[in-house]
Length: 443
Image (tube, rainbow, N blue to C red; front, side, top):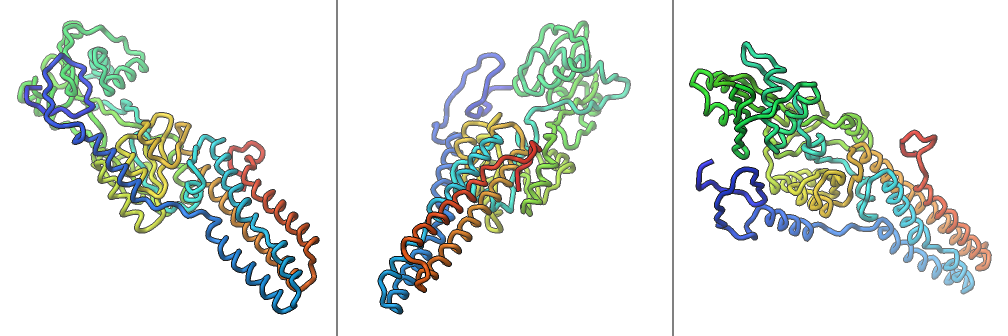
């Protein structure tokens, strides 16, 4: 373009050299702003209360009261000793952490890295999902989906000419067009006089034909008024479009879409069965592109044209109504990942910033592992609670028997050990693999 245009930090120059004047400091860059948002969200997040802590204090007080009452009523200090011997905190101090760590290990085995017991516990309580689009719901790679042709043009020829010229470009959309032409077996020619205007388009000669490929404005600028009018009249709702002109005539629009992951529909349906009652799509893309994609997915709300700060605001609004999990893969998602009750990053293609900010990472480039991890988290939490209930129940029964003088200290110690072993073995059930190699998590 012309001189005096603003350039964003982190931009890549793929064209000719130019003079760059730095007018702002690094502290005012978008990236620095995102880092600040992450830091603020981290500071504002309340620390997770451990599952066992909710019960430990009450159990200890109840034990001391019962021992004191038994001694006072019977006048026999041996009964108080027996109560204290039978009382076992192991369901709380051992069985709960064993179940949680077993769940973390089980999740890691299916490719979901959960950062700590608090994160696993939260994963088992999620009822709202905020999910990023690009690279999360979709593959993050543009693909040619359709060609809208001007009258008298052949689709294969338009794609062949556009792809031949796009061989000189490193732009993601150009790569997608070349890939589509090669996949269709089209014979590409080497372009001559290829000139790329960075971020706008490419112009050059393919054989004896002058071809121009790029954004609508870029292509229309070199067309006669009538042909430029035809180009502007061509519509491509819900998709990114690349215009093509040949020898001063509008030839067509190549539409590109970032395809949905194949496992998205089934995964979201499984999450709903696991208790997720609200699913919100969050994206920086145009609203029409987001809504076109959302026609194929069961969503409750769509938030488009979002900046990183907007994603944080969206997560905060959703947190007012439930336990929120945010799933994303990019630098722009990092602040929202921290702000959510649970942030999950796509680890295979996601950025380091997202992985660092998240509470969990999907090590494989698939969403279905997240539904499996939710199943594991709920099961681990259920087993931990079972261990607490059974252990404290058995211990309580033993303490009552000891208080009544029916369980001497020596036998009480043996009963206490049996209870401890039983609840720890129960907690280890969280490690159990899927039955019969079905790929599903054991109930």
